[in-house]
Amino acid sequence: MTLTDNGAALRLSDFVGPDDAVKAALELYGPEAQTAVAYCALEAHYDGRSADFRSGRQSSEI
Image (cartoon, rainbow, N blue to C red; front, side):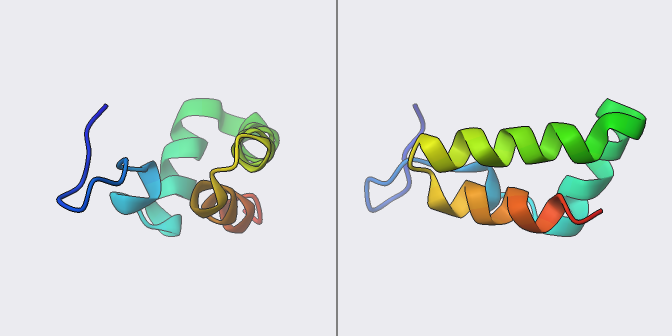
């Protein structure tokens, strides 16, 4: 696991903004992108990754 200078784990949301996440989801999942992103957001929520959950929730509004 890669850590930041202050010892926190790096997250996807540290590298990618919501617009780029939407583009990547559309390229990867096509017409199922909204469902895939919503599923990933739920997984992040239940894993306690609140920043990833917020990013996923915003991106699922595609």
